[in-house]
Image (cartoon, rainbow, N blue to C red; front, side):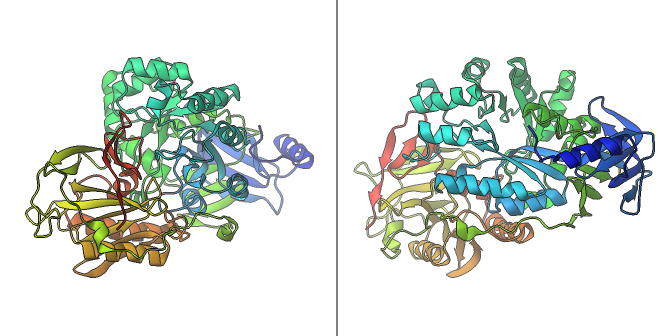
Length: 585
């Protein structure tokens, strides 16, 4: 398919420029050009007609006074980067992420749509289609389950078919409800099969999976997995015919060890490998976007040519877009990057669709201003009751024990039942241990709260509230019920976000007014806002990789072992409610 429309007039002009019968619109002169098809650098001219490459070779083109000539002696040219696995709602949004990506050389995104699924179907389609006007090419995935443990009107056979059949949707996934597949859930199996029936890709999510489990996944239709944690994991996926995506994200910075492990295996780099930054939260983007991921790969020992191929040609081939994208060759869309050096992936100049789009990290062309008023995201606050400090208390059960969620890392929690001290009112007291806090998930629709003690998020946290959660419920962490209530009340006042109360005052406020999960602000503003909160949490002793992802995933039912749901604390493996939710008082 064409990723950019090509008129009859533009097509004829492309041929004439290639034959040197018409003047080029752009001439990159004398650069060292990476041929991703052969992995060699060639001293060539790159000649562009409109949005597409007309010629790559040693002959000079026909020019006129309108031809833009770029003197590129001593410089290097590679294709625009392709991010095959983006999560564009990690406080930022698809428009601001696309701007940021373009500034740093990523000219194609394949993006998750999970956080759009609370919109009416026609608005989901309208938002995806509006992004088609951005210089960055945008494609999407269709999720097969909502990851919340709740019924959802869009995740039916009809809803899945509608999403999967949209022309901008190029894959299903990422598939996280693996237990549902093993239990042969009818809707999930329909989604898996329909994805492949449509000839589209199917992304898996199989961290730590055995070779036997990966066999079943491949049989079910999984065509790629980004969850390889070791080089041996990558090899298993490749041996079963999957693509293996090497990841470096804020929650899984695996890339250096993957590269070093692969080098130790002594195997050739595979054309079925890709690179991804996998939805990092804003602070990690201080180091760039996919250009930062490529830099990590090169510094870990991956040859630059292999890194560029994994970030350009390989994902283009995977998604069936290589006739249009992923290489510097005649007929392709003119997405190209001018680099200072072979091993420096941060572009001096970004060309997108044949235009000079960015230089030294600064946009030069207009993109898209979204109209958020056109989208009816659900309100963050559907509750009439005022926030009460009593919501943030917990009494032991009849055996004198309380549930404790123990953070094994940033996103994995195990539950234990423990006997803890109580105060004079019979509520659990945490005064003896500064590392403990209460964690409460509030379901405003059901007027319920799921309560546990949390170990491992930090020390002396008075009150932290977040609407940035996987379930859409409110999450509150703290040791002081009054501070916890004040933090949540402020979240409700500002229409969503994250608020930290310390020493009785608002220490950090991060507004996320779009669905309570993301911001309309430019990327630089969002990065600075998230860095501020992260720094304050680090000062409170948070020792895990990404405190923001922790907030998101405490209520995500695709991760082991114990999760907070509207019904109570759930055992993800069995689906059993271990501790039931309580009513709001």
